[in-house]
Length: 401
Image (cartoon, rainbow, N blue to C red; front, top):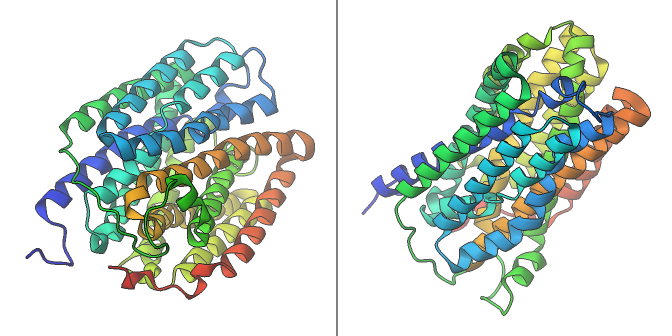
């Protein structure tokens, strides 16, 4: 029998390949994040609102398509759903790379978002692993996302220095095509059962109804929405804050991001290691939120020390929650409707991406950077209060089979 505390050979292979897929996909999407707000300001039609829209635009089409793509992945081989979505990312990146106006960038970003594969990919990770290994698999994939984030914040500015935003978008297209090659090498996922791990008594007529009615899943949807709302809103302001508050020229921003992410690793490890966050899910989420809130407060305070320490704490809390939330969702979701549940989860994430980018741009235009920081802190207060009264406050998910 396989050691219940270790991956089997097949699980290890699948997790490594899916982690690589996440790296190449998220690397491309993350590269543009710190660049639009400073490299697109001189483009025809550029305004603070459109800059925010360009940051979050891909989130709208992602949000609209994650549920149907997740549902489709419950009916057909998830690998082909993922491959098709990656090809749409290639197309959208090519359109954005060829654009000469702000409207063209926004359109390309919308097309990028139509490659809505997050739900199918997360469901694949759960399909390939036993429940006892799912938290570990999510942590490994979460770490790969953090690695992609770190690399993107260095590689993106380097590519932009060489060829501006078009070079960054062409790089994204190449990375997405590499993702297609990885998908072609994935083994066929095992068959799934109709068993429910936590709530519910069995599969009902509508998978979507089932995954929407469970309170423990609804709090996960809200949480991932808020997390990515914060990320988009923050990156509407952070690039300019590094210039105005920390006096760091834009060509050096990548090294600042990389240093903050590397220094955040010990804190991330403490928050996600082992199965501790499964034993006390609400406590773990609130701990991550507290760290994010302190980081945002320091960013609002400004100055060199406040900006750099604020970034460090923000990345610590954000990356830990980015690993914790998908793991919790995959465990409380009904197995047979896991793709659909992850579709709702991913849709909530990308609604947060879109609304966060647009709201960040609106707040920056209307109230300046202070308005963005205050808005994000108010959201964290609401999120924390909601989590603390959720059904998960008494749950111990480490006992799930």
